[in-house]
Length: 79
Image (cartoon, rainbow, N blue to C red):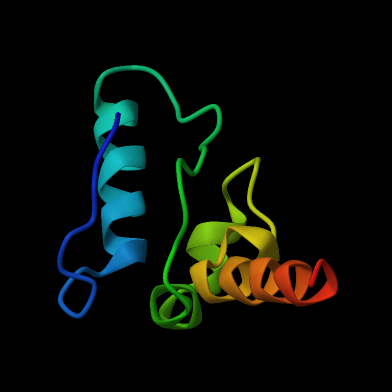
């Protein structure tokens, strides 16, 4: 299953996860893993940190504002 979240204010992350798990079960299978492609806004992460921590490849560097801060710090050091 691949999806893009476009309305973070109205998207119940845990309900989406539960729906995917339920549909997989209905089809006789299960969710083996999850993965985050790209970055997530801090606001979304703060809404549902457990949802994002389920992703095998998630860490704080995937939070958009964290990455921007990191890059700004690097840029300052290189001046």
